[in-house]
Image 1 (cartoon, rainbow over the protein chains, first blue to last red):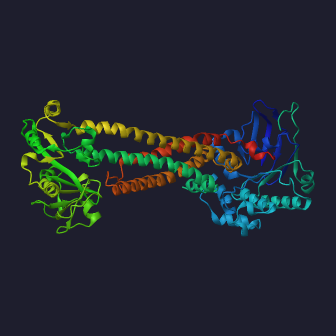
Image 2: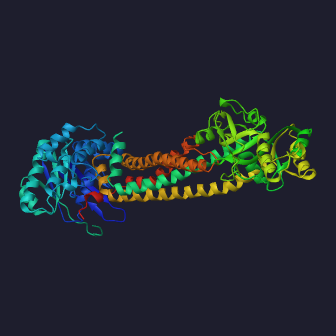
Length: 219
Length: 400
């Protein structure tokens, strides 16, 4: 579940953002809609505990983020949050399996190779485990990144523009995969997007519309 | 543990940059290692060969030359002095011991030194094989000489005129080897020692052939120089002046000349050391630039690590470990290269029958090499690591 109340964030020498209140139950899907500059990235960073709000509160998976210190927030994020960035950010220095192993490393857990293999298998990319990210197609790379985000069975999955620059068929496939992956871990799914197709593909999802601040200065 | 393995992977994900930085650091460390080794061994060699010699007395000329020729056997002697005057010097109340030396001949580049058995005692030379010389034209060879020429007790050899080798032969007066010295790590390793009478015999015979003269009497005999030990430290104040003013000879104090020499050589060592420091600074800059670029290239990777729940300290540690890997590898390679270089220079010097330098010596000061490398790497990694703390999440989330 995710709940926010009177959430605000101010960039130093930038715009002040105020967000509408949000409440989604565990396992539901939330669409975060808005044009660029409307604060989607900021909202995701606030929900991930990477930024500290200027006012209001965020409760994610039963945890009030304001109650956690910096290191505790990092630990909490490792265990409870899955993240699928738009540019995927798979490290070229490591193999596909190594990239998934990085999730264990970042969380300070011993690497569970069986879990890595299982996560890759669930997304149909187990045979690519020893490849480098540069040797993957766009679709394969997204599956790998998705496998990484669900590896530690998170309570919440944050996906940033998962359908950007995909054609209709690929976009539908990507969303279906996301939904399946979220359902397998009974995770709450948050999709930040400006893509209308997403809302059409997920009619049951809650939608929050973010508006750009009145005095817009930053991207 | 995992941080070490992971940083190693990250380091070698850019092999060219990693290799170039490794090379830079290695060069800097190798040159510093070499300077350390060479200057330390030079100091030690001087100290060992000086071993309690207070004064060297020889013909007028350069005092430095006298020391280099008489103690270290790396320069030609200035000339000869009358034996009678040396005997007179030995009678001086402030003189404890006089060891005469007679130079002039060599065998395959190794100097033949005519002296008294006191020389063996003074340097505490032990025989590895055979016995010391007892009669004229019997000789004892140093460890290097034996190794290089294959001379063993019972072998005979003929010296050649001139200490550089290649002069006219003394084939009609062959020496007979009676013993081989145990290695002493000092100048005697590369000398052929014989009695002073042997040298007279070889050369007087030569004169006899040329001039048809009979053997010269004792009073007209000459030696090349004499090593002197004082009876009392007070002698240092008066004896050199006494020799220089009242006799036709020249006295040179090794301690004074060697410190003068080390000051001159020291400039060279300082230049090398400075050169090494510049190389090291360049290497530090190289590591800094490499890490800085790595952070910029991997900004998103690092932000992703943060997103996956890694503490900022963990991300910074990853970068620091990357620099430390470079430092450790460069230390190992730099030490190896420095020792190899010292070994090569040592082999070249040995071929010239000059100062002993080896690459096989390990000094405690060399522990400073990895310490310096780690410090340099840490300094170079500090700013990139600090910037890892400020990884911008916007970097991760924005499309662009």
